[in-house]
Length: 369
Image 1 (tube, one colour):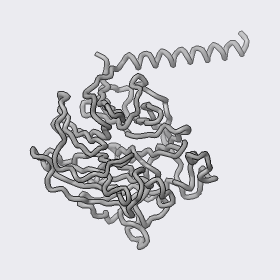
Image 2 (cartoon, rainbow, N blue to C red; image 1 turned 30 degrees about the vertical axis):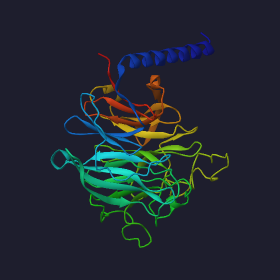
Image 3 (cartoon, rainbow, N blue to C red; image 1 turned 60 degrees about the vertical axis):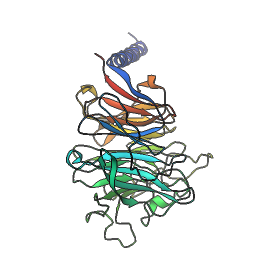
Image 4 (cartoon, rainbow, N blue to C red; image 1 turned 135 degrees about the vertical axis):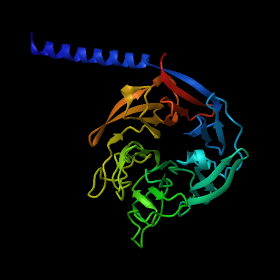
């Protein structure tokens, strides 16, 4: 048999197997609507009793019961600057929430002329949030309503990670250590800086900085083994999926695969000494928001993989680690057909998806019965 025919047969067989695999995988799940008509939901955080907390960008915090009932807005949420990309972001229950009732909120605070990302801790009671205390405020304030980051996650040692954006108009600041723009922040739950933070002894740097050189990171997960993964928005292209390591510089805006929205080149460099390369680069941009690490039992074929929400692409992408690298396997759940704001793995092993819409939805992806 001629070599050309053999190669063609091999290619056709490979394509057939990929299509068959996709069909089998698609037939293996179903998508349920948990709630709908909720304006611009931003994040979901699961509670020990099976309920969840849902934030809305406009400043509302609601409790979602395990049976799908959503509460009126919870009282006691701090004043939120809600405009454009600014608003209420994450709601993260403390590891000891079952005993303490403590949770952490990230949000934009201020007004159009001067605002900043903030993190507050509070205690959730039957009457709402009580004992609210601001534990982090970004500095300096910004005069834009964009690029706040806003994701929260706990490290195994109980310290809190906070992502911050560059404020859009201040893209040189992520390379400077005298401000909190474009950083991953690490703090104790009272807001103080841990003594082993990388720049604690640098008089010219902020004690709370853990990593820097970020643009607008809206995906953050900490794996059971303590490794930290994050994704961030590039400009026109150059979205990144990164493995965060303490003290490292992730390059924005010195290195990027993206262009300015005008089409102009931001930097001549896509790599530079002392700056980290992303594990995955998305060009054209998918506008990533929300990041789930799947470690549940409902979908054993996906264990150890990541699910990345896409706003502009209206997609969810599946990413797999391979040693020190990562592979993007493309989009899944395309039938959702909406901007994706958040993706999380629930304690039941199902995936939960929030759509970024005025009539937003919370969806649950579970195995097909």
